Length: 120
Figure (cartoon, rainbow, N blue to C red):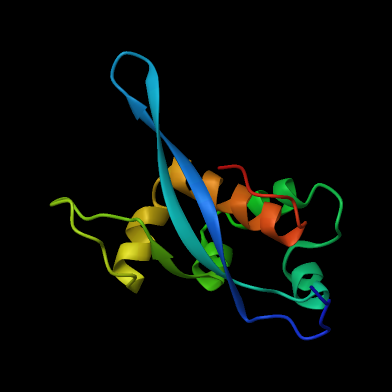
């Protein structure tokens, strides 16, 4: 596979969200997030330098604006009836109200940016 100087606008990336259960257990929900790629200049402008990228993204996104901007689609998210939930602004914002989901999405986004292999 050849390396291209032109990258895609979005990348689909697996996300594992730990959902707390009664009794102290955690159920891991797997979804696929479509993330908008940022170039290095936009990333630095948004979160600062490259060191501790996860910490910088997480701390700079206290209100969820960053993830609202880079999360542009998904697969594997269900509504309360078990049907595939469409990606809408309202559904995205509902998902981002979950601390577990926001943390997992941030981890996945940073993992994707750094080129670390996703864990299945």
